[in-house]
Image (cartoon, rainbow, N blue to C red; front, side, top):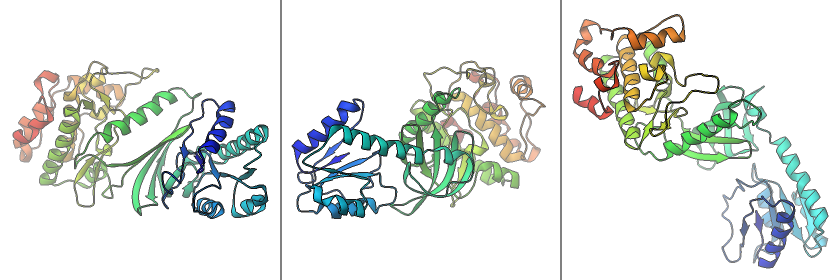
Length: 396
């Protein structure tokens, strides 16, 4: 980002940069014409700030000082009269260039060094491996990591705090590693998750606060759901009235996503969270797909989803639609009422086969009034099931 009040100077810097980095994305800001940047300006999304000293009524060194004192602010290259070099470095400029005598070679070499150092220091590797990253990370601006909730080789979930509004969030981070099998696909699915959830406003679907995308990573800041997941709730036992209430809420969330053409495809108790007030929120749309897309296998032949909650058609990798999610919800409803899964086996394939061939399980007598609804949700053939999640309240 180039910040200076003189258009010719901004154009000159842009020419220097694009001559060497033709694919660089450069934004230019005129603080005289557009007004001074707000105090909360964090430099987010920029690898480096090129700050000139022609800033209207504001003193360049004062602006520089404010920038470098902000946590996580990108490095600043300062352009001013040659006699300001020492003061600029003292204030905290990463590098200094005389405004009236810019040498192209020196400029490109020094900025290249700054960018290389920044990428090396700001590697996202620490987010996924080794000790927990606590506090502010250079690439995840605007958030303070509180604790790691879970991680794999190239993804991590943190409880974090959004600095600007003192708000706790769940921060999901995914690293893009081109030389890792399927990393590109995983990265794309991660971004699709955000794009789909961002379209939805519904009380039973998790709220998204922020998305950030970098050269080799992306992050999503989601609503923090303090009540834990439904899996834990089931393990402690759920009252009948609560199970029915949760079914209504999850069904309402499914009806909404199906209405705009989205399948969840990984509906399970671990992806259903509770707020402090007891309301349900559907999370983790990482396997969701637009309905117009066909069921897919990974390159290794792995089926997406969780066998305990898969519909027969999803387990056998045939075409799926919204009725597959309804089947998964039927499995969850049975488990909420009984504390047990309807089908189990020694292997994942054994479970998939039982979903397709075993009879629909009978509920205990005290829950028999829900058997007809369960039969309609767990029918083996999609055409024999409830056709929409919106029908669930009518059956209840």
